[in-house]
Length: 325
Image (cartoon, rainbow, N blue to C red):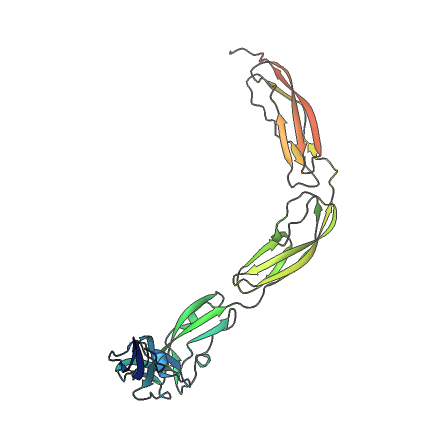
């Protein structure tokens, strides 16, 4: 037979063989169903144009469909206008759709760097003679990453635009070197003296420093702002071993009478060249306050490096010698 497609209307000659006979026949392919489609509105910025197909979605037909303007819109006219679209298939079936074209004199969205002064109305305009803000743009916090809907009136028309406040600049900081004893805990903020960024910055170690390593080591800090911009800064950590034990002062023997309160800590103090992690304990487990006698009490101070100082005193408890009278 003559080559044909069931999706293309037309008249085709075919031959059918039956036994000894071959019969000639004509095949007519027709399309009697109009195409389907959904009209959608289109928003353009002043100076832009588009095809008729931009106004239609979900086109359905068994044959190819031609999409065209009934009358081409005026792409130089700001504001809203009605647009009529014609859908025609190969069977000459047609469907007319109606929708809206909005041509804006204002940018649909602009991106603005956080920390800068608020944009002027001219920063939003594409083409306009007179324009002003409807939105109070002075009330927007330009240091916070966010999106803001801005309303602008230009040449008598009202437009909506989106202001994206973003942060594209990586944070910076001034760091200090630290000299300390080994084992003393460190957090990233210990090394930071000044941070420079519009938004809040999170500090973290690229790799935790080795607090047991005596000597000098390089410490890397990762600075991350709210927008995810990152900077790595380096400084040095100098560690030395702590071999000096704590010092106990004010430790002395105690004399009381049966029933009196024992002030073990009065006047006693534990100090160390590395006060971080210093512990001070008093072992008075052997004292019997209601029984006269002499009892040992141990004062013990231990620093972070494990250096320990211990002193033992005697608590003397005497019986009361006076009568009730």
